[in-house]
Image 1 (cartoon, rainbow, N blue to C red):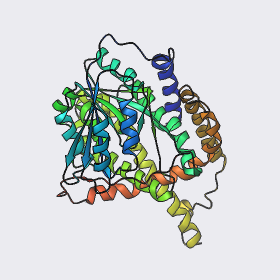
Image 2 (cartoon, helix red, strand yellow):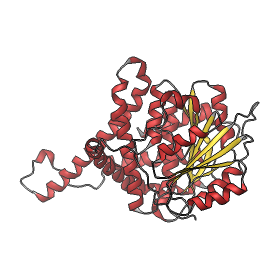
Image 3 (cartoon, one colour):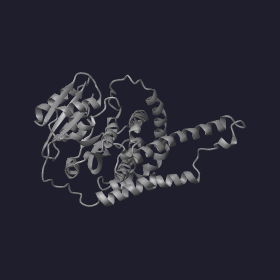
Image 4 (cartoon, rainbow, N blue to C red):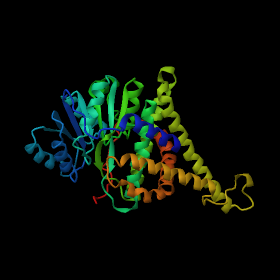
Length: 398
């Protein structure tokens, strides 16, 4: 998969990305409704709205959806409302979850396109200039997802995630786009065609990751999802193991929910373009359980000497020549990914040093979250009506 992602992302860069770094000039400026769902976001919402109000796209409105916040979010939004004519505020009396907040914003919107931005994200002023042309050129384009960049640089975990967003997340989206289907849009900032959302049924209120669910829903309804790496936003990422665990566990649950829910819809030949995405995900889940079996065999080899079968013995977890090869491929992947994204973020190649920790820390964390999430999703109470959200743990800015 590392070789596939590396080669696929390089092909994407050569075919679709290389060239002008100047945003295209549009012949028309369709109205874009920018939706900002927020729940207990008093710390970040003012900076997010101010940044959106100052973006360079000439024809837009901002709709902030206060989803039952219990902190000072409502007061801050009221102050912003008095300063910005383009801003409207919707208030939900109780917390119904991000999907329902987005639905409320979509129903109240006037724009043909809906730009969804997380309440802690700082959208680049030129992002819409890069995204809107995809919709104007392709009538079947339902969504264009952008390229989130990490802005907090404190600690090992945050520094590793700088490389991860460039060398894993961005590369995967580039290579999947070459296949014609994308596993998920980035919920941090993504632009939708409202008609496509309406025809597909909008966001599901029952899933913990509305971005994964809507990506599969749109593509199974024969809409196109694209990736635009030049459409940037700046986000804060978890800087503690606890925060990172909760984030990745939620991502794992969302992927499993989508695979279980939509897997049965992929049996027919017309759905064949989603097969590579599904196969890649299933193989990844199987790898995680294979890793778990390997670790269990290692523990039992040492706990039950002379009893545990020799055919299943694992004497050490220290990487040998295969581990060195795997680490080398990982570094190569990081080099390519960081180089591609260095066109948008100066100095990012300096973070290659931290890539050596990625296989040790993040592969194990991802494996554990998948192993835990699968039985949780399968056994979860189906009577739960709304998948509610909680404000994630975030780091501070550098």
